[in-house]
Amino acid sequence: MRTRSLSALVIVPVLLVAVLLGLPGITALLVFLSLAGGVEVFRLLRSAGYSSLSWLGTVLAVAFVVSVWASPASDTGVLLVAVGAVLAGIGAFAQKDPRDGLVVWMATLFGAIYIGLIAFVLRVAMTGPAIPDGAPLAFATAERAWFLLLVLGVWSFDTGAFLVGRQIGRHRFIVHISPAKTVEGVVGGLVASTIVTCLMLAGLGQNPLGGLVLGPLLGLAAQAGDLAESMLKRAAGAKDSGSLIPGHGGILDRIDSFLFAGPVVALYVVALVR
Image 1 (cartoon, rainbow, N blue to C red):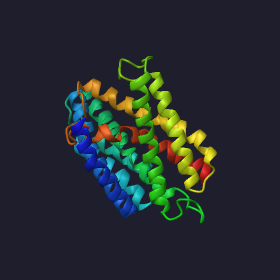
Image 2: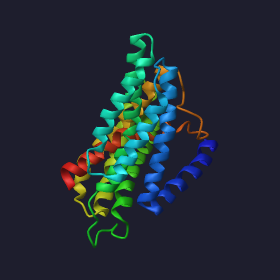
Image 3: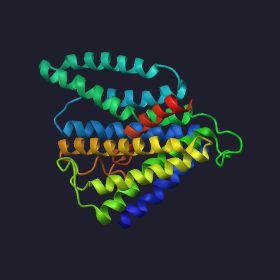
Image 4: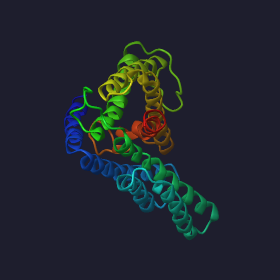
């Protein structure tokens, strides 16, 4: 616990610096996370028995983030997926056994898209509507505020699920992937993420009742993202995705929830807010 607390003293200031720098800082942070996360994902895939073109997959994941920064409203991401599929397919030709080549092709594209989902965090920050004058968070730019909504929503779910699950958690679920998860913990996390999301939407000058929709969806997506990474680690026989952050594991252990929550919040912004 002491190691985790000391590591948090490093993680939180880095996040605060990124927020204070605004869009350039947030973009730089997400580029680093996609790069480090890509390295960890392809290492896990290799441990699970899935060969890949790890360098190509990692470059593609970073490219997804950069493409959103360059043009958040374009379909560049779809083009990158298509180009990645072509390049990975060509690279897989080097495998003498066609079955091995198929594995390399699929694993490379999977790893790139999986980590590339972090680009939706940047899309939320860049496409979230402006904060109207008079809103409680009007002093902040929309990029910072919408980014914080996503971050605080995920963190509140994680915190609520941990505290409630630890205190009263009795009914476990999906034990073949993550034995420690409980139904009570999930409910506690959903309540926490809903409350925080309602408050953040109110601060952004949006209808806070929207949090009754976004909060649970964000929380469920965060939980699914955590379980998806746990499934990958179990397949690889690994406890953590890496050891970059003492007491916290690797980068992927810290961003797994955001990989699924980012697209959900982005969809909410596009469908219900703009």
